[in-house]
Image (cartoon, rainbow, N blue to C red; front, side):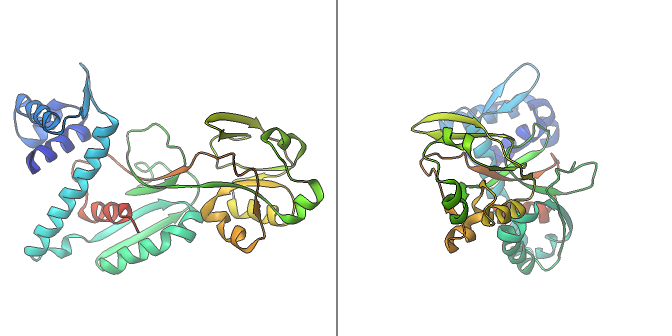
Length: 291
């Protein structure tokens, strides 16, 4: 395999088919198809599912596509450095980012990126509302949780653990639940940013368990819900980046730890563009790197 095959795979996935990808690359459709077949043969895996109307990447194909993007980005960056073209990573980037996650986790990573790329102007819109990237004029968005079906591309940045907690004050007054069913007798604080809504879904001894919870309090603010829990108003389920400090201080204590909630995926979304700005590609690569 070589960089030509990688670029061909990128084109096929981004154009949703061989015909458009071949036109983009200036090659025959048969050549485009053969390159993908050769790449699959070389790797020993199926990268795309072919239908009469479209070409859809497999899960391994999507992962390999994202790796190819990183490789191409690094090659382009190296070539740019040799040519004295560092200034190519420049311009204005508008991003929609979630409030609590940005303030707690994302801010230092974005600061490091702007320090390393002084010609990039980064404009952030902090909101937990899911904006329409294209109609609202955003270059990218970071989202925590399940993704909606869309034509946008997504790069996974990580996954966040969820914790069920309550304050010592609440547990001393109401008692500590010993099973998931016991939650029916407790005040549960609902976090509206969870896609499951008023139903908490957990894994217990390799079995999925669901429980419809009730309570007087609900909001889409993790910090507000954390404050309610610390004040002894009920049991809360929140992401680690919101609740971790309160757990370390002992203001909140974990309960029913053998019931595990699915992790929340963190993704960066960007429009399906033929010519992605170098600054955006560099930012995606930077955020994808492990700490």
